[in-house]
Image (cartoon, rainbow, N blue to C red; front, side, top):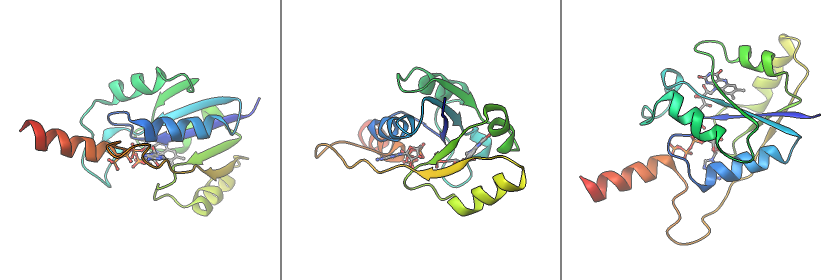
Length: 142
Ligand SMILES: Cc1cc2nc3c(=O)[nH]c(=O)nc-3n(C[C@H](O)[C@H](O)[C@H](O)COP(=O)(O)O)c2cc1C
Ligand SMILES: Nc1ncnc2c1ncn2[C@@H]1O[C@H](COP(=O)(O)OP(=O)(O)OP(=O)(O)O)[C@@H](O)[C@H]1O
C-alpha cells in the first residue's frame, strides 16, 4: 500500500485542482490531501471559503481517500500521522523539493518528494486558477 500526500489551499475548486490530485493519486494507492489553514496562506490573498468548506469539497472528490485540515503551526505533524511514501508538490508550488526532503530526513521520516505536472486549458475559456475565477466574479458581478 503506497500512501501519497498532496496539499494546497483549494479555494473554489477547478479542473487544475482535479488534474493535480489525479496525478498525485496515480503515484500510489491511497491519496491523503492536507488543506492549508487560511491563517497559513500568507503568500497570496486570504481564501474566500472557510477551512472546513475547502476540506469538505476536497474530501468529496473521487480520487481523494482522505482530506485533512492542516496543522496550525507544524506542517510535519499531519505528515507523521499519515506516514506517506511520497509527497507530491503542485507544478507551481514555491516549496523546494530538496528543502522538504532534508527536513523529512532530519525528523526520521522516510518519504520521497515528487512534483505533479501542469494542466493546460482544455478550451479557450477554461479558468484554471482560483484567483482568476475570483477576479472574474468581481469584474462581472460588482
Ligand atoms: C509538505 C507540506 C505540508 C503542509 N502541511 C500544512 C499543514 O499542516 N497546515 C497548513 O496550514 N498548511 C500546510 N501546508 C501548506 C502550506 O502552508 C502552503 O500554504 C500551501 O503550500 C499553499 O499552497 P498553494 O498556494 O499551492 O495553495 C503544507 C505544505 C507542504 C508542502
Ligand atoms: N492548472 C493547473 N494544473 C495543475 N495543477 C494545478 C493547476 N492549478 C492549480 N494546481 C495545483 O493545485 C494545488 C492547489 O492550488 P491552489 O489552491 O493554490 O490553486 P490556484 O488555483 O493555483 O490558486 P491561485 O489562483 O489563488 O494561485 C497546487 O498544488 C497547484 O499547483
